[in-house]
Length: 307
Image 1 (tube, rainbow, N blue to C red):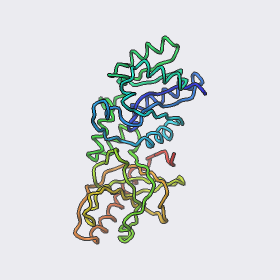
Image 2: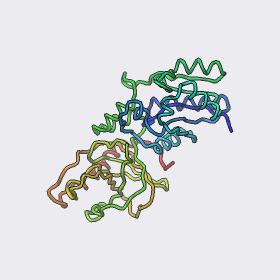
Image 3: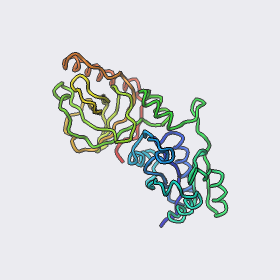
């Protein structure tokens, strides 16, 4: 097994703070001839530690895809966080990880704690690694506009529909990947066919409403799009939440294809219209608004394709 340089953390959202760790682990990997990797957990530790559900920014698979697509790290290792792991002494955890994964370089954030009662602090980890000739980097807080970047703040921004602010902290567009599912066919009836997706269980649903988005197909092509998140009040009494995207200029069938939606701009709240005709008119306005927004952002660059 090749020896590794590992970034250790949960990495929800893969924001600019995480980027500092991921870039450093690649630097160490190049410096020492190691394989860069990420070691993380399948569920948020707070779920067990504080017995509270944490609405995540991304699913585990989405985190892995973002790490690979944006930072070029091919190996993400997920550990199952259960009560045994929660109660494991920090020395036992790090020794087991370094031995099993052949870790020769560790990168953590300034506030990362691990092991029983969070007793594995960055300071203790650094001293432990020094005794064993393992490189250890502790990355200081990353700030933007004077504020420490955090997944907690990004979750709040998403819930309020402040997508452009969230994207600044992320360093990339907030994203959803899913396999296109059969839908209600209403969009086609209204002259604006849509693809249908869902947010994975446990992942935060951004504020309901209409978003300017870009949709990436599995063949690498992308389309400006309008995406509605919500309950479709004009045509349905259901409480289920749908994600429907109209790809501007696309003609074809995407059922069964895996696509990615990048969220760029919040256009308006979801609204119950008096008729389907009124809804159809608004969809046309939403489409024009999306094209106008992209027209004002000609330098927008997004790393495309699907991981």
